[in-house]
Amino acid sequence: MILLKNHNKLLISIIIFALLTTAFSDSYTTINIDNIATVVALGFDGDSDNNLKVSFQFAKPSSISESGPSGESSSIVKTVSASSIDSAINLMNNYMGKELTFSHCKLIVFSEEIANNNIENEIFTLVNDIQIRPSSNIIISKCSAEDYINNSKPALETLIAKYYEVFLSSSQFTGYTSNATIGDFFDRIICHSCNPYAILGGINLQLPGNSEDLTTNNETSSKSNSSTLSGDTTSENIGLAVFQKGTLVGELNAIETLSFMCLENEIKGFLISIPDDSNPTGYLDVYLTPTKDTKIDISLVNGSPYIKINSEYSGQIYSMSTSSNYLDSKKLDAVSKACNHYLETTFTDYLYKTAKELHSDVNSFGRKAQKLFLTTADFDNYDWNEEYKNSFFDVSVNTNVKIAGLLSDT
Image (cartoon, rainbow, N blue to C red; front, side, top):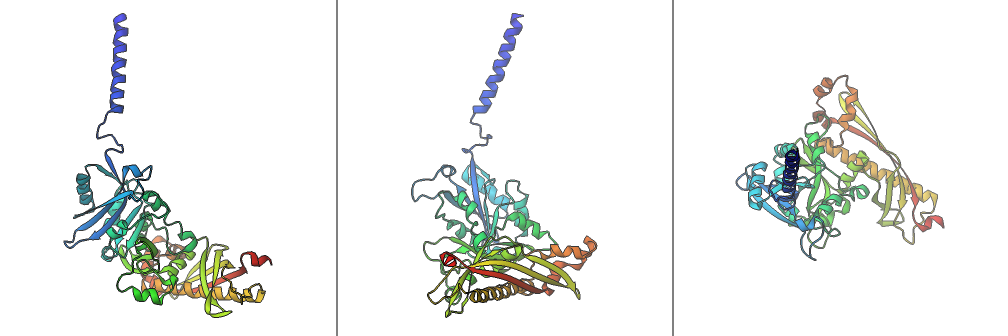
């Protein structure tokens, strides 16, 4: 009996020792910060040998929980050329001496050059990786993807991963970009009723050929790589890249992207500038807030899509001058009508650009049009993505503008 008790104690001791040894061993197979390299952004360019040039941005281990010394970057960027994404990852695993993990990858960047040649294969490969989150943002860069990532310098954040989490939050109150994700991009590639889009990125450096754009256009017609922003060279996101399936077919500037956001009901408020009646050479700044979701009605007229848009906004005048008399109700009515005309023209121009020039339904009107067909087969046979180019539009905007600030109470 005593021997049995001693045997049981010995067995229990061996089990406890084995568990403790496994738990505290420094085995490389254990997933911990010492044997993994955390990728926060991926960039894709082409090279002269028709290979894929892949840039990996790694978060430094010390920067995951705390910032480094002042002026020190919280990340490093390494680039490798390979025949495929998986080969590039394999090469980088060997170079880094650690296993790459993409569970914290926030950003996927394709250069404009490679997007012109179709990125469907790359998108399918990335979506097939269980570590790549569908919520990762997708950017088409007008410069190389490597340059875009190298110039992503958070000004108000200490961690690059945190910066990538919040850098698109301004889209909800400017409308100059959108929170485009790789998951949504993939869904739209295989969709029969819409087309993909991505964030248009670049760097705020005036490059040769952009000077004319900067002097002849105002801020609403600007795009990444041609904005009026000055200061340190950093990456910027203004506008959208429009696709047909996996091929880039065009770009939207700031005001066109704002139109997209309004029709998608993804904006809380935005600022527009309209001609000022009290100052023939000046403009009036009005901040508009949607009062209800944009209403979209679709029908078929002689086989072509007929799309009616109805939007309603409340507005507040922000800019004032000594000659302004916008406390007068008649003046406010005139401003409201001016806002209506501005938005109706802007939305209409945007919609006809997507249909007639880009042939791309990025606002997913086709999903609403499915109800016009008895069966899914009938809708597929209609071929919405092909017929969208024959669409015509009827846009109506109703705006109620009031004076803002202290003057409204005087």
